[in-house]
Length: 163
Image 1 (cartoon, rainbow, N blue to C red):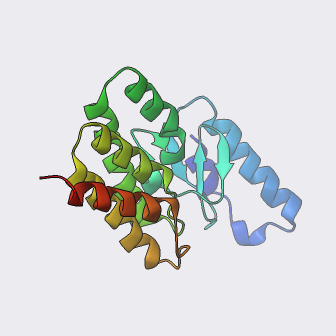
Image 2 (cartoon, rainbow, N blue to C red):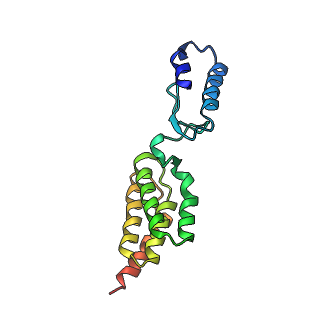
Image 3 (tube, one colour):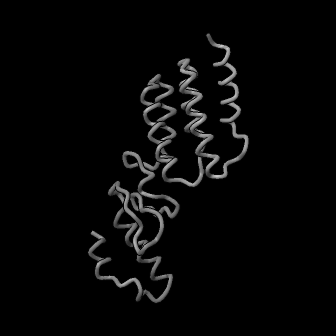
């Protein structure tokens, strides 16, 4: 739809930023309601998702058409409904995306996995996900003592006392 308009548009000939913004707005309007994610045009960073431009996002950060940050509600609902396997599966997919694609390591996803594993008395896996977070976070200059590091210490102590 808008790709044909872009093919005929020579971006280097756009005289001012107002024209550039207007062109980007036209593309966003054309994408509204289509329910898809596309790379931003003109060599811009980011994506256009359903008619909205997100400069800090990448297409590879999307799972099933939604940005990983928008999946928190799904995780909460799965846990509330007792669908722990679904929550675990989604959280593991999110952790994979976070580790590959983001500069910041949001701990919430890892913490939720640790909670699920702990409630199921899967302490080895709870320790493993906390260690995974710490390992990845340390490589990105993360804070020295995260909440997950504290959880990891408690889990190790608890697991050490188990037969």
